[in-house]
Length: 279
Ligand SMILES: [Fe+2]
Ligand SMILES: [Fe+2]
Image (cartoon, rainbow, N blue to C red):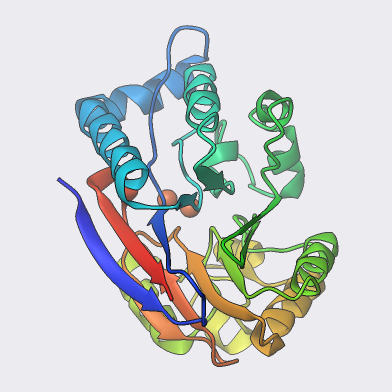
């Protein structure tokens, strides 16, 4: 059973568009082709596997029947195993699905999850031949430009902001989708309360708000200069009409400092989805 949150975004379209926002499916497939560590991750989630796959199939079927587009904002898989990559390849053949990676797409074992770790993770190599760019994507549909950016490690690089600017300059209203949400005060408070480790898992958190973080999480989540430039750009760009994100695993909506609404959607693996009607 799906738990559908319904959202209306008015941007002045001639014809309404329906988008299903799904995120954080965390599919845990694995077999003997992968190492013992990844197999142990899969064993822990094995009791939930059938339910996770059933929810995902239900979500895709719902999007096929009722929506013009399904946007998946990452953590489609729980870790980068061969079986999970095959699953992702199969899913992404569906042209109705627009997708950007989350942090779990790169997860191959315990290590500092920095950009080089992300680049080394082998899922990247196994999707590029399908034309899937995990770090930046865009699609124009019904007069709306859907633009996706991988910010899964709470950082954004300048080339991603520049490509977003180029998309914005095309003149269409932009729906921006990310894995990790952008900082906003009420979301920060809710997320700190939810995660219980002192950190909020948001992008663009300032030094005052990082004070509650354990140092190793502050190091990961402290925005670098290019990330700050990205956040400032989004907050100041009127053609960005809404931001969609996941990563924190609960539903939340709030207005970003620049006046744009950010819609965070919860656990896809439990059938939580957001049906967005664009008017
Ligand atoms: Fe997640
Ligand atoms: Fe995540």
